[in-house]
Image 1 (cartoon, one colour):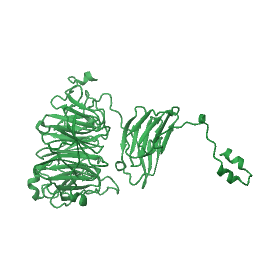
Image 2 (cartoon, rainbow, N blue to C red; image 1 turned 45 degrees about the horizontal axis):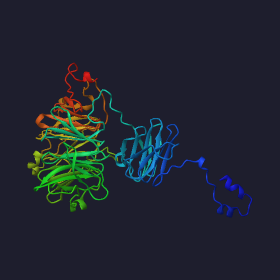
Image 3 (cartoon, rainbow, N blue to C red; image 1 turned 180 degrees about the vertical axis):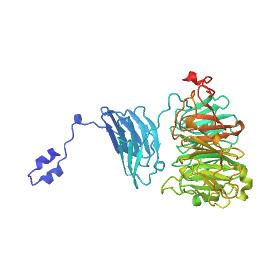
Length: 537
């Protein structure tokens, strides 16, 4: 700028000279040009790590050696919208990226893997993101939206060396197959594993089931011979899971939003797969043996779903034969549907605790039908259980959509309830909180008609914790925020659990740890002097 301005000083024609002249080009030896398709919207540079990262409209984070502009050294793909903010945390070689759809991701710069993803809803951010700033000292991210938010980025620690795991990545869903006595588990890394229930040995696994997208839910068809999985890529896939062959892909046209839950139902002689998620609609796919196309589209939406359906993301679904379907959403609304007609049967609104702050989490992530009580539906007995804000559990009567006859909080510290399971006779309720504790209640005679003022009978002698179970030859360990998922296998009196600590476990219904599902061998917890963990350690 100095060279441009000096010739024009003191000259009457200064403005004209500046307008006509063009600034001299920088010498090629004094500049380095990084060419990126579709351009760069943001970048970050770390001299300490000798690293330059760029992001832009093509939704890809590129890693560059500052002295080698001809080709990037890595590409991080996972964002689904343009990237507008990047930061390199030099102390731990982490990359923070934020995209215009309010998705925040943390990457490991060394192995170029995604360590963490968070959407704006999960973080409580509302409105459009306009600016971000990372504070290395406190490892926190300032985000400007409708309000200024401060996110503390605490990375989940790696599993301790003495702990055994079933998957390398967090296990997001797991289910027992009664037809073949097998356990199928799916991970955040899009890996599906099949385990033998009797021995605990891994029978089969296949990777990249949904590409790079995490598998969020699974179910089996009516015969148990086929596996159905749903993922963050917005697709459902039907598998012959004994050989990893994908039989069909189910998805909507256009943009596919994340699928949160799915179930297999049979109504009026028709077999269907029902999927729910971020598109806020009930997607019904007919399961027909006559369908020859690999990619199948859902049936037209129910009219009530369009006019009276959920206004927020649908997080879970449950089916109760012959024709009732329950869905619950992020805003705490539960809708019970008549699948025969596609009409709303009733709407239920989760009550907020008295000390719940405005804008707090009101989501319902699981609903469970008490099927043995459906014959007494007209009596006003509670026939549906749901979790809710601040770790609450609610029992619902489906007669009038009135407030629930019973609501209580199992966790003493109000930890969110991540999973609910009941025995087939609806006598006992198992509720797991996000800290890994399981609470057991006797509900056989609970909420049968009149409002309940107290929680059901608490079976204190059968309550246990994932985080304090003595595993690995008596060593105790702590896992915080495990978000376990539960399933009761009543015929064997076993509870199946999976969680984001990468493990699939079996427990007795009395709370005693039985075993892990392991790739190499089945390591039962007996006594320290008899346990195979001695050799393992």
